[in-house]
Amino acid sequence: MSPGESGEDLLVRTIRSCTDRIYAVPGYPVSSLADRSGAKLVINEKVALELAIGDSLAGRRACVIVKHVGMNALVDPLVHATFQGIRAGVIIICGDDPTAKNTMTVQDSRYFGLVASIPVLSGISESGVSDALCASEQYSRVALLRVSAEEISQPANTSPSGLVCPENNPATGLADPALTMYGRAVRAAAGSTLIQKAGLAPHPLPPVQSSSAPQNRKERGSTLGLCADCPFRSMFELMAKKGMSAVCDTGCSLIAMNPPYSFGVACYGMGSAVAVAASSGNAALIGDYALLHSGLQGLMEVYQEGLPLLCIVMVNQCMGMTGGQPVPDPLPYLGFAHPQVCDVKDLKHLEELLTIPKRPMTVLVYGSCPEEIDHETVAC
Image (cartoon, rainbow, N blue to C red):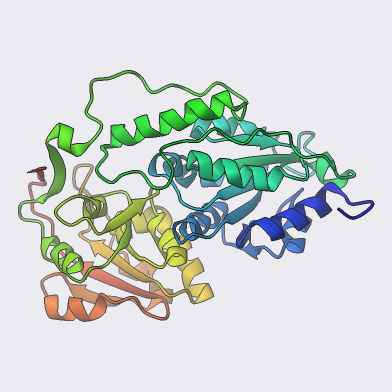
């Protein structure tokens, strides 16, 4: 540590030494921290966290720097990461402005520990960043390091944080894809109990209610499948045959994680597939509604940075998981991407397009869902 080092100085030094990738959305009191740490400025906080999660899947430690109101924008992938699990550590360094010196609202970002059941560390110390990364990896979820405007500007705390090495969590890494959704919640709850015991939960974390619900598909005896007349069945079979791997999104693309296809890697919430896939080296498989709902900004970031991503959009112009409600054609929204357009029945053209490129490529695959949407139940 250098003499006269400020809290910001210490954070800059430890962030740069402990992480492989740094992303940020500037704002008081973290603008200078983001700049000095060499963070990549990202279009918004949600996309920043999704890119960091993608790095985690690829084995890189990542840090996201935001101000307290920025936490509001990244909650969806934050919560999903707790249940889906991660690989390498991901931390959010959040700068709070408790007296609203230069912000519109007063929030305490530590409450997001309760919302997402994540470990929360407070204050700036010599070991704070490394401890947060350790906790993230031990409990297989994002960790939050909350700092205040005053701590950033004041002389650094030279002592370590005092965190005891987190208790070993047997359920680290990604959740077993054989788990049911409830099973993933049970798995995450075991880690939450350890977080509470380690003193890393500033507020009581809600327990998973006891239930006789099966925790894996084998116990349940079934898994969700495509509709019997789904036009995208042939595309799924083709992707599985080619040995592709894809980050999935909320909606029918999730079925790619299930047998007999099983080429889906993970899912981190609505619209998340694009940015997560872009930094993890996988393809993105996403529906038209998820893309329009909250995936467009991630796709804009990917094209702006020229990241090598194959984004496969299933265009059925309806919400196939929620009742078939209509969805606008995404093509008019994607002029910046110059997408390739393919009919799902044109398997020869589709096979040519399903290759990870050296630059961003978006493929709109059109198919019409059956009038009566009825997802199959496939025996395990």
